[in-house]
Amino acid sequence: MNISQEDRARLRELARQQQELAHSPRNERLTQEWIAYGASRQPARPMIRIEIDTFEQDVLPALQRCTGEEARAIERRMLRPIANFTLFADDTLVPDHYAVREHLEFVPFGLPVRRQETGGVGHHFVPYLHDLEEDMHLLGPSVYRVDEAGAQAEQAQAEDLFGDILPVRREGGCLYSCPMQDIVHIMNMDDLYVAMIDDEENFRAVLGRLVDDYIAFFRLRQEKGTLRSAARGQGLSQGSYCFTEELPDDVPQARLDQMWLYMDAQEAAGISPAMYEDLVFPAYRKLMALCGRLSYGCCEATHPIWEGALSHLTNLRKVSISPWCDEDFMGEALRGTGITYLRKPPATLLGMETPLDEDAVTACFRKTAGAARGCKLEIAQRDVYRIGKDVGKVRRYVELARRALEG
Image (cartoon, rainbow, N blue to C red; front, side, top):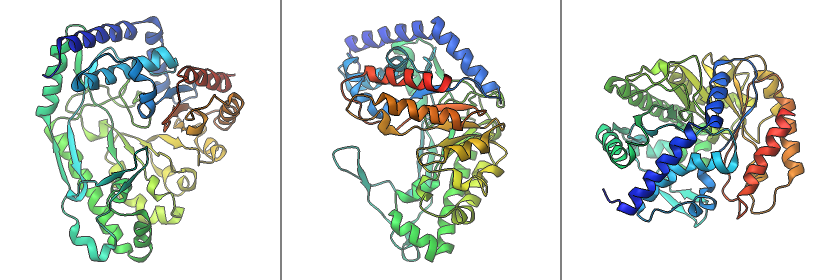
């Protein structure tokens, strides 16, 4: 281990702080609220989470004290929920343990993603494919594996560092698959859209092969016994949690039908609902049918594909309501269904290096409160990349949102 005694002492100090916060009255009350929220198919108080990962560079450096690279990575991971809990006062939980999850590799078609950075948050994916008919020979079998030795090494390291203070546990999470994103990583979106029109047969073949590879990968994990079910405070992608009473929690060697699955197809946002239903949804549905419960959607608008596709999924439990979504339409569609209205507010409300526009924040959340009346409502603030020096404005944002939603 490349961790100095000074950094070890700092991590042990953080472990004590995490344990104290995890057992604080507020965190224990919040845990019970999340359990009740996940157990009910009826409306409850709206839950609010701020996803810190994308703007942590404006928050965590002032809190970090470790100097070694390896120690700082562990320190950042421990600080994230602590920062949410102490600085933002949202509904993020502080875990009573340090979680170790599966170590996985999945390389679609055996083609590593080639990415050019711009120096900011922007980037460009360097394509392998341009014309499917000419370039199909470049697609090999997907490469995937489960690195159990890596997970065990991470667990052993954490136990050595602070396991006598903060329990170290193997933890499950959701299964994750976004095949349309995988394809855009190796093929420009404009070329992809042309292929969907002019070379439908090869597009179906590419998407079908990729979905079959994901199915084989998921089944491999099931056969190896590395799946662990998640139905409490484990992460469910998109800033959400796995809380539900419809799946067993923390079952080792779990079956696929005991697992949450997260999927999206935001790269298909530019095609018609009819094309989505014909070319994308049948392949996606093969994966969706394997798993116990499903959370769907990222930045794409889900209202155009609700009637013809998503409404037919019996295991669907959370749907993304992005800034490009018709909030009123989806409120009407989800009301009384028990499916969570997972609202993603516009990132520009918070993600600007300027003071909050409090009137705009209040108006946004009042609109959501009206649209989602009678729905299970959850807020996941995502895609915030800069907040500037005023960290306190995140807490104020949460206060304004809570007041508008509950008032």
